[in-house]
Image (cartoon, rainbow, N blue to C red; front, side):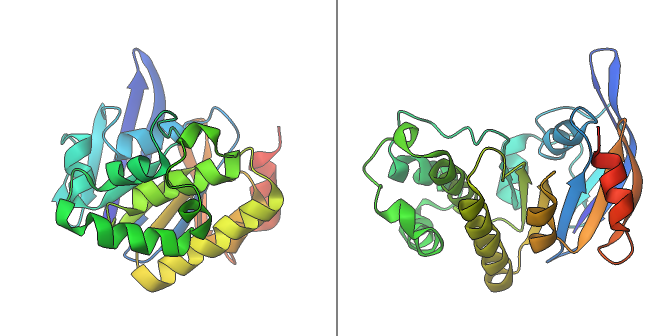
Length: 232
């Protein structure tokens, strides 16, 4: 499905991503972990086309997408929930959700919204309210729902548990697992919350200084190794 080969990404003259190679198959649940500032968000932005690759190759469904625009990647089936959620606070919950389907088939918007609200019933109670008045947990659910409105094949989430109450974090984990099971989409999360990560992912990549230093299944990557690369 998604193949990343020897990817290098820079901010100006500063190289942030150094020769990263990753593979995500259809239906995989992957977690990218590492300390703050090692390049995790930069990698996600590059995969979505928000930052250009200096070197390397990104392929999706056997088609190279390294140089195509973000909206084209979205139409192909890539969706992104950024760190900090980035909903539009002055738009209603309904309008925020509709934005997720705007670049796709508008005739399917109503059907998709019904499906998303089935996953996130709390949003149904607030459809006419501005997104900015929702709690942090509700805004995160809205951001995920907006991404799901595009019916993606792979869903990228950047620190989805950040700043959210533990009970809501657990609920989001359950919802993501349900969506994965029912839709068969691949899930790729960047996360430092170990409990949340292990509730979702079965494959792990660990990043240090812009490079992947270890990877494997939950059984193949020892907890001691994960904690070592997360400890400041």
